[in-house]
Length: 143
Image (cartoon, rainbow, N blue to C red):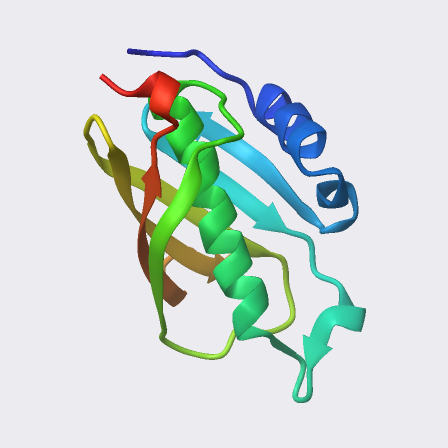
């Protein structure tokens, strides 16, 4: 099914479901068929020594990007929840906005599986991390 969602709709749903999102620096940049791109706006106050974007920040963005992509597959539902997630850090992430593009790989009656690629804005071919995860579908949304 195609839900024809906009980034603005996703961002509103994000803040409605999770009010702290407004201060997180995270937003949906783009939404497509089974894909979503999320952005973490660079914030020097949240950097680790060496000006590194922290692993927890990268993990949070990957998880959120996949949540947005899940919306493109099953509609906006705040109760789709992460059931597992793993991340591989490839190189340091420094000095720029962090982007994450999530792609839904599989949708079944009980879960949605996806892959996420992360990079610093301006360097989409130089990945800083890759992640894979799955979301549990809410009971009322299952096939």
